[in-house]
Image (cartoon, rainbow, N blue to C red; front, side, top):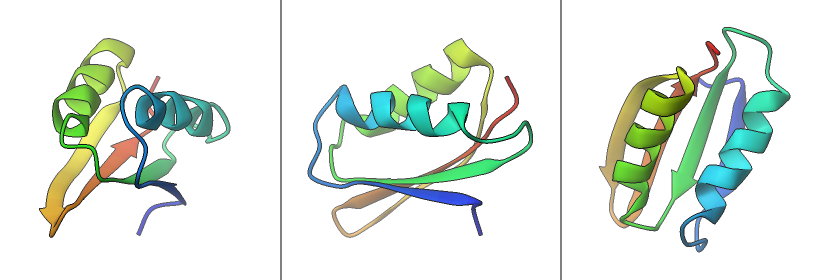
Length: 75
């Protein structure tokens, strides 16, 4: 279970990424953030976001029309 959950359902790019970036700033190093999004573009967006920022994308999966991402704050 993640330390913080961010509900980004109904938001389109770039809002899920921007909200996740803000939420990660409030997490200590090693903390985890779960994001729930409905924008199909979020899959590639969060992969690229983690690659660029150095945070770890621990999990990514889809349930129905909702995409779930778990990011570990490492940067």
